[in-house]
Figure (cartoon, rainbow, N blue to C red):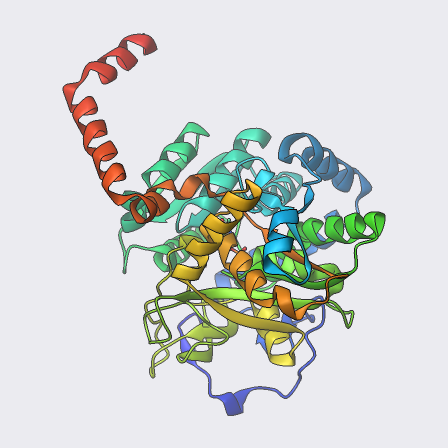
Length: 442
Ligand SMILES: *Cc1c(COP(=O)(O)O)cnc(C)c1O
């Protein structure tokens, strides 16, 4: 077991190319995946795997999960036909799966609720999670509040400072946000800290990993809980007689995309397309393109083997994207394998094209995409003409864009936004509203 990053040469890879839809006994999808962890984490991971397999066979567990999905998350989410986008793009019929309508505003709640319910079934009272931009922390905090679990979120100190709105929401949900001060004080360090905590408290605590990556069995667990998205799409299309030409999702760690693609992976059709963050360009440090980028390499980091953006020594390179959720140096092992086998195509979307997609769908359809999801929107805009008009392109809108107002407003209306911020500071420093709020709390 080796937890340190190590650069794996291409020639070290096994020759398997088929990415099966579940990991092998050792947690591999063809050449990617595995369980590269310190000895102390082997037992908690093995126990988690056994409990997960049992729960997925337990009707009472699945029924409870279904009711929470229906009444708390708000499933099923709509599959929306976008008539204006279809007309303007001139090709395939454009449909949008509105995951952004899920409670808390994105798909992440599907996984957070599933894992927290599993933890409860295992008798755990305490939940920990890592978060970068705060979206996974927020979903986990909400799930813990709903299910009555104690919750600690590890977040790099730098991220705590930049993502105050999400920190505030996590605290409202009753979670403790633990600022991580080691390393670069960002997501990578938060993951390490959460792993350390879990290794120290495996009996009381479950670690809710936020995407379809990390050591086995996490890629299987996260895909399973997110595959509700794809199953609904398949049913909705069958009911409405929609023929799918292509499905498009954005890819950070890969949880919304693998869940959306899952029921179609072992079929020949439709085309499955993953949109990575192209950032500001193709150069090293300018994007987060793990499948199509110049610095993409095979490697082992944070417990799994996959494609990463690494330097010559196997160290993680800096990444860049306008969307915090796609700004990560690794990709889930199953998607890496599906990319290598050719079943999933990858494309890289520039920040500016994602912003353009945000305005396009807002203006023409009244739907505000999250910046992450707008990468999928932009990829769909590019390929719509390639697909015949009797077929559909389905975009997974993984989240809605309200959360991005601090990023989109300075781009779309910089002067007005600056005025607004100045006025807010004046209002708060004037103290009147703070005073009023304090007297209301009494
Ligand atoms: C976190 C996030 C993503 C990226 O994560 P995946 O695991 O790749 O799905 C995409 N969209 C939204 C809205 C997110 O919050």
